[in-house]
Image (cartoon, rainbow, N blue to C red; front, side, top):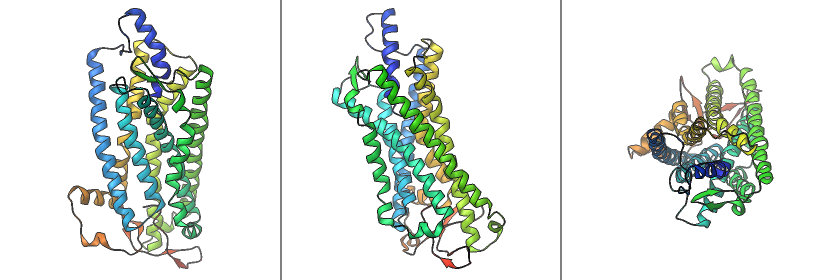
Length: 360
């Protein structure tokens, strides 16, 4: 969800309120103390810097791992990092200049791109959940799927998200230096954000919950088997650890976005208080959503030893000969972290087969 869209009704409603207090003020000013405002600004700057560094590092790690072993999951994780990176950069403009000096076209492009980044992020999480469900539930069929087509899926997600958000190119405009969709009639705006909140957000959360519920049901049936020391048992432990990592990513996304989505829906329904408490809560919700862009790379490093090692190699400019090995690799688990090792998988009849590293 774009931070610029958060100003749709807030800027329109509050600007008139504050202009009534002081007609010489042409644009919105936060209704709280300068010290608190500076804290928000410094926090946003720190989040922006951390988001750029962490997501660029995650992109480099995904690219390095993808060169060793192409997989759809790495493509999804890279796309998610791109969405978070673009969202944090574009969102920073909303905390600063609001495109007051850059013109109408920049306002429309910024509003469209930030909405697209949010839309792409949540659709990518749904695709990741489905990909994991498919790999865990039917590993043989997942291995037989055509990889060339599936590698295009992250790109198709961006195309689909752009189409969904394309109407905002018409409705976004610049008013008093603030980028807003005020040209979108109130009923049309209400319909758009109801669809975005209920259909896209809530339905996506339901699909992710359903997918991971099935994943853990499948893994629970092999709970005893995972305690063994065979290669197949390591793979099942790897599946469980990677599933927990993705659940952590989804939980963080929900916790950081739900307050903002709830308040935005209340604003579009006209349930908004013109009080300092409301405005402070509104800015905190925006900053919380903004902070989410920095967290995912740390989750990857916490759960994945291979990801930590790759990031360390990138930061230290280290490229060992082992990183240039070409054999097909498979994510297995040791005691506490994921590693990439060339190990076989076994089907239900005990027969060996090679399982793709679609789950990193």
